[in-house]
Image 1 (spheres, rainbow, N blue to C red):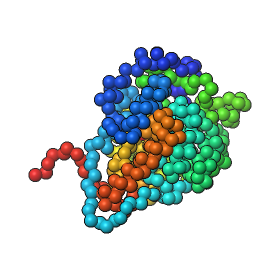
Image 2 (tube, rainbow, N blue to C red; image 1 turned 60 degrees about the horizontal axis):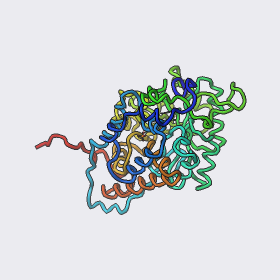
Image 3 (cartoon, rainbow, N blue to C red; image 1 turned 45 degrees about the vertical axis):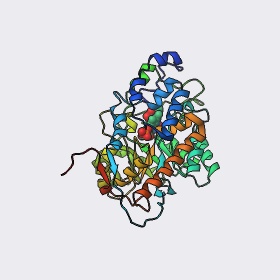
Image 4 (cartoon, rainbow, N blue to C red; image 1 turned 60 degrees about the vertical axis):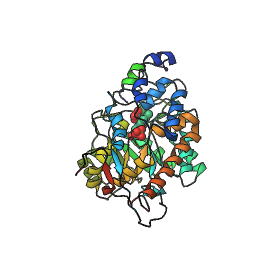
Length: 394
Ligand SMILES: Cc1cc2nc3c(=O)[nH]c(=O)nc-3n(C[C@H](O)[C@H](O)[C@H](O)COP(=O)(O)O)c2cc1C
Ligand SMILES: O=C(O)C(=O)c1ccccc1
């Protein structure tokens, strides 16, 4: 990648230096996170356990972190109108996604460097996702190679679905080799992240001088790629020169379904569907790329209208509860992704913590669907979402 972790400064800064450089406490206490509940507790535990530099990497966003805050705030501005007496029975909480039939509508969003959260790293996350019946989207920037990640998931549940997240690399031979590895690992879809023509500016990481993984950790998927010396890892490149033609070349090079992640403009969603993608992920990258971007949730209805049911639409960013999941479903998503909450669980208590996050979201989603009078994930509709605190119409 172009900014981070660029090998400018090696090794992690000390805890003391990070604390001096991290005056985030007041801002966070005033709080964008959930005030109570399991996820909030795991977040607190994660924060207490982690090196503050790594906490800041996981929690932070681009520039003034406005997009990060908006993702959660957008959910808080909305409420759900339940329907009653529909005789719908207890809600069924599975959906069909590309390469993942009958799966939870909560997908683990791709996040980098899980070994900084917990030494068991991505293998622990994979086991937790498999146990919950959730798709794991494993990041190209994982600290465990994709083959090992997918094997860990299948050891828990042979039919567990793992998707591989990919940044298209400027050298086609490198991209092709990454795709070959994902296919060989048994991944069932590729998720191409398209919101990163350059790496976002992360103020916390700059202040903490966090620009490289600590010794002993590496982006393992980037090891032994074409053009590099044997045994070494290549940096992940982000390129503003990429275009739809590069996506078409990728689709021609694989039989796996390809989803695009990081779409906010409805016209881009239309183009993506016309290009033949298998799904669109509405996302502002957890507020880590364009800080001026709207909340993902605010972009969702227009994208869902543009896609018009032709492929699944997913949303990630700010999903912290079953009510958030159901709100996104009602506004046109087939499923949602969760990024930071899984990292909180992983950092707090390894595999068990990540599994608790996913089980909690599954139970809350089923409960809220049932309270809304819906028999399944497709049964909540846009008319059931209303603004909180709006002007009374009378
Ligand atoms: C620490 C961290 C690392 C991330 N790494 C990646 C990545 O490697 N690839 C990617 O496409 N998105 C990455 N993302 C973005 C997530 O996939 C997702 O869009 C975002 O986290 C969703 O927002 P949430 O954290 O509020 O749930 C990362 C996000 C975080 C917080
Ligand atoms: O931090 C991120 O959001 C991210 O996408 C990423 C990508 C490559 C390496 C590290 C992080």
